[in-house]
Image (cartoon, rainbow, N blue to C red; front, side, top):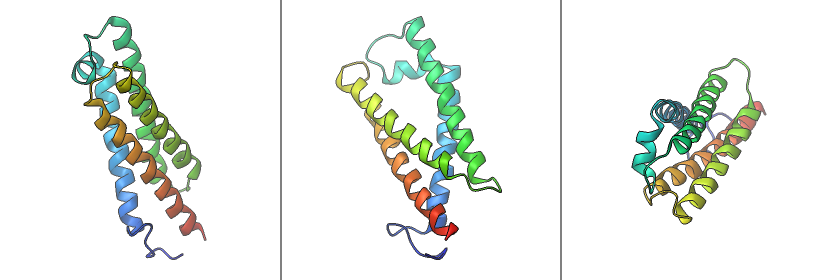
Length: 138
């Protein structure tokens, strides 16, 4: 497959741009969640945040920021790192499942499903990018 062949009808460069955009959104939203977890929980939670829930939500935000930064670093690195894309896709699928379960258990509002669906979409994009990286390697 050459660099111009499309992946699921999308140019490889657009897939890469989507990965960068998702990584940037993940980094920024993770930092916001880390620095102001009660505010974010107030938007998507079903009850008032406790100190404990805010603390754990901030920890999740820290990992979101780290994964977003890691993906940006991997995309712009001189060395192709397909493992980063695989593990980030798995993280995104895990987040989709965890947030969806939280919504269905009444821990989060229905608005949190938009976060879950973004994570599902992101995981699929990261897998597409992994396919792009594999095609560029051949």
